[in-house]
Image (tube, rainbow, N blue to C red; front, side):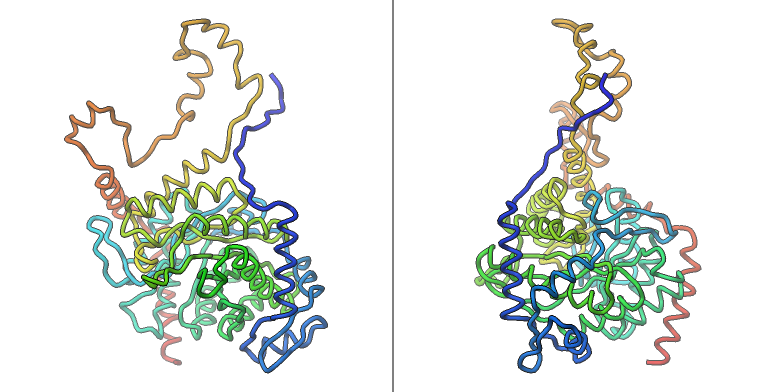
Length: 478
């Protein structure tokens, strides 16, 4: 038996080295000749203080290629992420794809009926606990925007329910720009230093095309000053906010990401930044943005660009267009999760949205958990060597023999195949005997069960009490 065990491992590559270099050149050309609009006066001052940024007109900034290249080289190639307990969880940039549930849905889709209702604080607590219970999800992103509390404090209670109901890392999105710093204050009050072993990753979106809006740069500045890693991600709608061609969209979105990266490094050289795009298409007839196969191709292309830059990546999660945990939703989840696992995707943090990403579906999340597990098994491959080929067992069984009682079968049969926690393997006869069960009904029942069983982690009540008292003090000052 050989000690070395080479793996048969599926991989996908979409851009050639020449195409990567070409895309990079296009992005640099856009930044140096078209530039970006920078709305914040303080952000413009940061750019103006550098040697490679030229302020033209009142708000437009042109970025020299040398400055952008410096920013790329200044960015750490990996980001270590911890959980709330301070335990190391994963390393973006050198690790397998990671998945999370979310993001910022306005409604909650009941897993038993598919009926939607305004997203509430209770929905947030239940959904975060579900994400904590499902093993294939590595992070919890802001799942919804609370509709049952005043806007002036809703984001703070959302953050409170997130930190109190899971120990997993958090990706936070704050809808009210004025509450971003108070949200960080709340997290520090409950946890202490956020930067030492970061478990909180703020997520920011510039405005496509080519705008670093004031709210985004101000929040990025606050996150950087606290020593936090951050995600800078853009959302492009092909034919509306980006060119109608995939090539034009890739070049434009890459340029925007590099502009955001350059700003971060000018604020503090060495800031850990995670970059990625959420490319979608725009249907001019229905006025709906949607994912299609080219969306996932662009997602993989962006991931390969970030790999070329040696910058951690965050991309699409395949959610948004289902009407529930249905066929359209499952097709997109499979395409996204499988291609992510065999490509260079780093983080896919937004699983679970339906109906134009407006409604969070726990049942969709439970189904996605199974998809991710199978995609990870597929991408892991298998070893091909003398020990695994087992020529001695083949010789022992001989022609017409069997392997049911072989040494290797007895050792490995429990882990050799995938077993669904939701859908049993039924023969025709067993399916008929059980009165023709429907897969969707089994998924609904499993989801309802998981929601009922998913309890809070230790210390949840104390965190809630301390957090509520802190929020009340903030509200009293506003």
